[in-house]
Image (cartoon, rainbow, N blue to C red):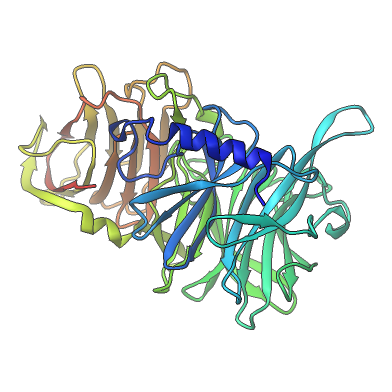
Length: 493
């Protein structure tokens, strides 16, 4: 049975379906059908298609009453919109259906697990949101909320756990068929913790352990957790809020972080071995992964950041997009990520150049706003150049620039001239792990974004841009001398 709130949202979507011209959207990144998008939710494979839900306000291009938008794809790059899946229409989620996840049940139904939010006035008179975990079951199109909701409440929290910061469940099946979920919480030291819950049937849950916690070392609340096995290691992905800068590894504000180590399923104990930033760019938050049918671990994220979240004036009917899906692996104790291989099927016209560069130049055939380009810089005869600059989305007034200085091994993305008229974050830097001067940058460009994969996926940098679409130039500059190899493909979407 469809509630009035869900019916209203679907009627609104139907009214405005096709309202936004395709050329005013990203070409191969998912954006909302209409209105606002933030966290990806329910990333899963079901009935032969990839399903991706998302935090959604169809009525405005600002955060508001959270619904779940819904889209499906056969290749992770071409997305078909489905009707709104969830609306805040019950007593326990009337203030929002917050983030969550999805999987397939043995009977063929799709199970959604999400955070239901309702407003509550505290004893001190301050209004806050009470957060509980809820379930819904459906057929890939329509979903019915579980009559036993909420399935996890404050009664299921450890001592000192917050009922107001308890959200973002990520659910999965264990090898024995049982269910597990990791959920974000705030502990009594006012910083984040990650809680593991277990269930035999997917509906009745018990607290198993506190997998890890922040201890005020890496920000405060840890949002959007994910936990999985990859290449012999256990990985936990999370999005810490309110971090203080730590060199160039973590920036101020909202970050994303991976924890790598070992996990004992019997004791529920996780032992960290390493950690690091997932993406070093400006716009990247709220990761979620899924296990594809072919065994790949694939990750997406919201290609935005709350601290740089300014709606552009040239897109009055939509805001927010999802990163290109990325394949994950572990190498030498570090997380490696690269665009899904499906993107190679979109490659059209190829342009290749291999030259010695000692100034600034453009190259014939190298331009565009929807492309996949790999740029390799190699020192000549062992002489390390002083600086390399790559300008993208370049016009008479606009450009976004990537600068690399091999002597410091610092790479910087600067979108100050990308068309934004707001004083938000426009620069981000990172220390490249290789330091011999050679660097390889794979650049994915879409109409409103740039994603850079450094040295075969050892690091990634993502940013949205608002440069006019007519600004499609690309230029290269070397201070000193180096070999420049460029392999550029137009993407035919």
